[in-house]
Image (cartoon, rainbow, N blue to C red; front, top):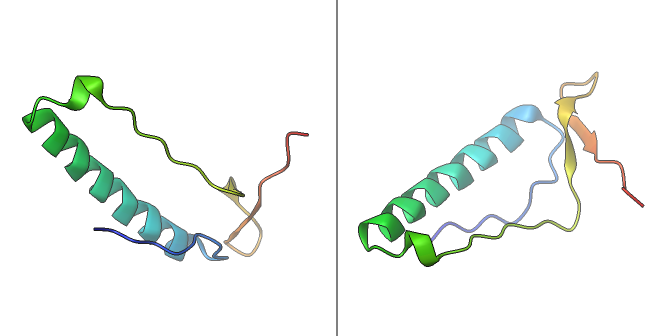
Length: 69
């Protein structure tokens, strides 16, 4: 089981590594669901209490995303 405790990092390399690990875990999970014939009856949901922007800032990190309020 993959357990990650947070994505609040200021360097792109740290965030990129975490997303890569999460992506690989999800990819393997989806492959297993398809192999067992369960994929068509599955919904995956991922959420966050806050986000980071996708664009690097001047320090090579990312800023907190802007609220949509």
